[in-house]
Image (tube, rainbow, N blue to C red; front, side, top):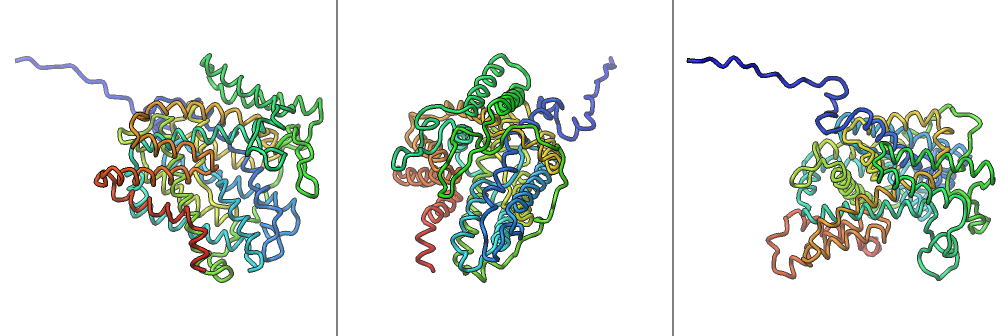
Length: 501
C-alpha cells in the first residue's frame, strides 16, 4: 500500500484592496481601477457646472431661486457644491456596497423637468423644495420596488436581444452627447431649417471645435497603439491645448443677448479653460436638506403630483437598468443571462441615490453612462467608483481647479466609448424581424429623443406587439406585459393628465 504524500499548495488569500474589491479576480489592477475612476470623473464632472446652469436662475413660487436665495451667483455655488457632495457620497457607496464600476450624479433630464415644473406652476406658488420632496417620494417607491424584488425581476425578464440593443443604443446616445457637448453638431441658428447641423451654419468653426477633433483622433490613435491610459491622456492633452488656445486668442465663453440669441457661437460651451486665481474654495453646504415632502400635493394637486412622480419613476427605473447592462457588457461582468453581479445591491444604491438627490436639494441622482469611459480605461470593480466619488468630494474644495477642463476636452472620451459600445450591434440577429425591429427602435430612439427611457419603452412595446401579431404571446414574460402597459401610460401621460384634471 502506498501513501500519496503530495501536498496541495493553497491558493493565496488576497487581502487589502485586492481582496475587498476582487481586483485580481476580475483581471484588473489597482492602477487600472484608479485610472478608470479618474477618467470617469473627468467625463462626468461637467454636471457640477451644468446642474447649476439648469436649476439656478429660475425664480420659484417663494420669490427666490433654488437654495432659497435671490443671488444668482450664490444659488449656482450652492447647487454646484451640493451636486458634488451627493455625487461623491453615492459613488463611494456604489463602490463599497455593490463593487461595480459605475458612478452616480444628478440626472440630466430630471433636473430640466424640475425647472420646467417650476416655470409651469409658478402661479400655484410651487417651490424647488416642494419638487425635491416629490423626488424623495419617487426614490422611496423605487427602493421599495427593489427590496420587494420587483425591479430585479423586471431586470431579468428583459429578453437577451433587447439587453444588447439597450447597450448599443446607449453607446450611440453618449456619442451623440459628446458631439453635441463639443459643438461639433448643434441646433441651427436659422429657424425652420434642419433639426441639427454640422458646427456653425454647416461648417466647423472655432478653436473649441479643434480641441474636440484633436482629442478624438488622439484617443483613437492611442487606443489603436494600445497605450495604457489612452482616454485619460487624451482628456489631459486636450485640456492643455484648450488652455494654450485660450491664453493666446482670448476666446471666452458663449454668451447670449437679452433676447436669448447666441452672440459668439464659436466660443467655449460651459467652461473657459484658464488657470484659476485660486485652486481652493470653502464649500457651502446650505442647500442640503432643502425639500418639502408633501408641499407639491397641496399646491399643484394630487393628479399632477402623481403624474410627475410617475414620470420620474419610469425614467429612474429604466435609465439605470439600461446603464447597468451597458456598463456590465463593456466590462465583461455579465453572467450568461446578461445580468451583472450583485444586481440587487446596485439597484438599492441607485434607489438611495434618488432619495439623496432630492433630500440634498439638487435633483435625483442616478447611475451615469459616462462610467463606460472608465471601464474602457480598465476599471472592473467598485474601487474605480470610490476614486470617482473621492474626486467629487475633493471638487467641493478644489472646484476652481477641476473647472478648468472644458466640455470640448472631455467630450472626445464619450465619442470613442460610444463607438466601442456600438460594436456590440453585431450580436443582434438582424435577419429576424421579431428581434430586429424592437432592437432598432430601442437603439435609434435613444439619441433621436435624447432619452434612454423612451428607447427602452419603444423596444418593449414593439416586442410585445410583434409577439401578439405572430401568435406567440406565450413567449412574452408576464412582467413584460405589465412594463409595456406602464410605458403606454408614460408615452401618453400629457393627455391623460389633462383628462384627469
